[in-house]
Image 1 (cartoon, helix red, strand yellow):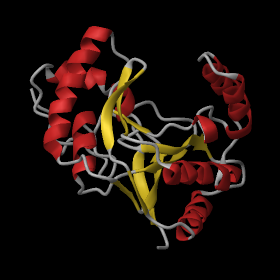
Image 2 (image 1 turned 60 degrees about the vertical axis):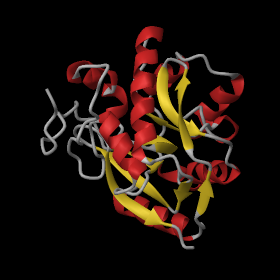
Image 3 (image 1 turned 90 degrees about the vertical axis):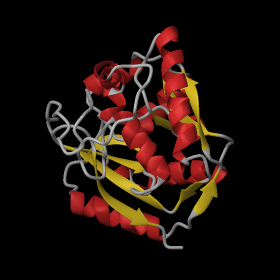
Image 4 (image 1 turned 90 degrees about the horizontal axis):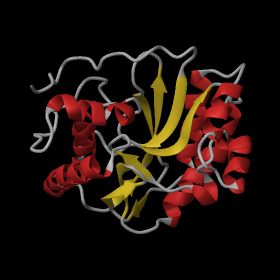
Length: 244
């Protein structure tokens, strides 16, 4: 049974306060955005379900389960991980700071993305390293950190359950997220964690659709995107184009 294109994505529990994130989001009409949104079954630009992939190896219900975790965040590449606003800060101030930050940046092209396994989940990763994208992520983390509220103890404990290196633990304490700066690895998540057999099937499924999508060209980065989560999944609320 296929999903309705116009139906709203079912709401997740409302967070105590809104969360924000700075992401790379491909242009809304680009082949990459259409592919990623279809794979997740959710378009973060419109906030509604996306036309799903025509699956051959999975039924719609199982695919919906497989993609539940990344669907909560919308299709994206993380630059600054989700955070709540620091006391005394407003969304309007955050948007103004994002606009200033973007205005001082120049667009660039990075290598294209390819499907890959990262541990037990599938994602799109760069075909080759991109120093420009690494610099953008590092700059986003640092320039906007004054807007990030400190982690709660529960959030900190949850992060520390993962096997982190000493450097990643330092990054977690300083920046609220362990995979930044030297440990940043750009990726665009497409599934949750899977066992080996199902991951192989999902990789074959996604590989076919990605090859047919026309999304295999260079990654053109000309803006950053601000996502917000209130009720339900994250929603893209503003794009901030670079100055040149």
